[in-house]
Length: 287
Image (cartoon, rainbow, N blue to C red; front, side, top):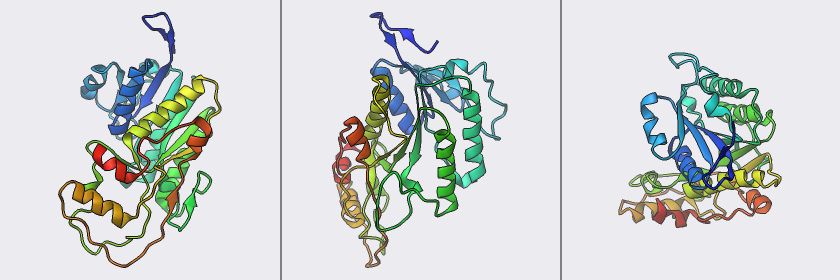
């Protein structure tokens, strides 16, 4: 059964979350707090207790050719038989492009036969080319093998009914402070480049709002960018980020680079979403 009764008798919607890492775990905890019944998975059975401790119905699931045995669809029926499905599997492209797509295809096969009210697939703004341009959701381009596999992954889910692709910009937040990325480095290029980042809290809120919008009967677009609306330069931001940690600020050379700007306001227009952290500079105190 996708729905269960809450203590007050109301029916709670259910969400399956495939990928309970840094972002996925934060999202799962928020959805539990909002009253959803949440199922989730980890690659190892030894890691499931972290999920169950916060109220998530946890299942072991390892996809791909490296798995010691093929997933049992019947044993996983409790994981996937939900109202909503959120897929957050990092591409880890260094393993090879085919491995990532194989995992996603295997996942989709496991969910066949279940009709979701909404599927949310977490992607990345890495699908956009390095050009001096404001990038909207329509501007994705496969200019490399990596961006091609990211678009191929999106296409797998775009072929499914009720799917929404959410492309995250660079993700920062607790335990991922950007001040360490370039601290102490010299002769860094691209001082002029616009910074495209989004805070973990905004990512959690955005996906939650997409699910809520679907549940309220609102129309959700097939693709949304998620990126803070303010874009300081690379030099301005990473110098401030390093200094906020008391680290040596990076030194930049005069070599300019193409500066793409990710536009993340479609979700604002469509769903009334509001970025809590409108500028990457605002994020530094919340990392």
